[in-house]
Length: 284
Image 1 (spheres, helix red, strand yellow):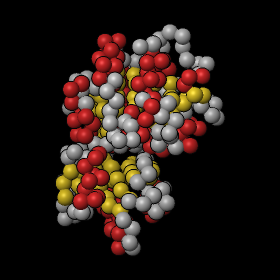
Image 2 (cartoon, helix red, strand yellow; image 1 turned 90 degrees about the vertical axis):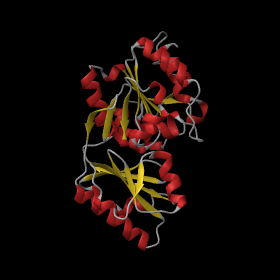
Image 3 (cartoon, one colour; image 1 turned 135 degrees about the vertical axis):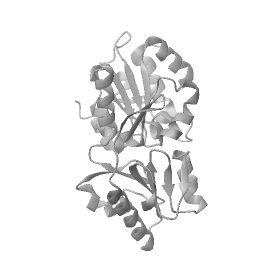
Image 4 (tube, one colour; image 1 turned 60 degrees about the horizontal axis):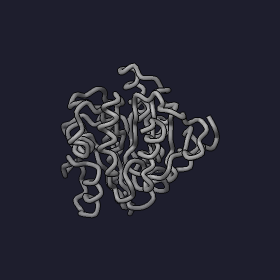
């Protein structure tokens, strides 16, 4: 794997004709979506053509399954959703896999957040269950951020007492999460995944849970190889997913570690990089 990915337009490894791609997996925020969180208009006709060719398209996101299902409601039939950073994988409303956190772990993270808040850190916890997300903070600024990613969410008095299978705890920090919130979660890093998934977000999951684990399970189930898989990502929670595909693309706007891990470089999310790359590689 090259240390520095080759830009798309100068990529010598791209085929002169359509590649044998069976599965396309893309992150959402910072990757498929532009900076205003819009899905590119050209995606919908492209999805119809991919379906005609027998190519499965799969969103893989830290977003909640209900949120992804709503975004793709008109084309969701047969689509696999890799939700909550790989902890919950669903197709046609049927769970394909999940990775559930122990209640004691979710509770410990929630109590850590409460201590951070008491120390003056502007942060809030989102306890992510299969049915809903749960929060204790009620201020509109925090809830506005929650609504972007969690269509199904409830305000509760105590997030440690919810009756749901918890698959992830997400923390939103109004400051830079990599500098303040993430270090406070160091006690959990020895036994669990603590992933900075965006400038303001940190996710805590089981060590076995990530987008790459979910993708490899999907590949095995469908009989699709890494050589037949194309993946797009921009942030640290996409690293393992990039490793599962020979056609791995970091966006031009990606975190430096993601750029160094991917095989290739795609145009940025604001330049319609995902669709442009798919069109080039598949000869659409």
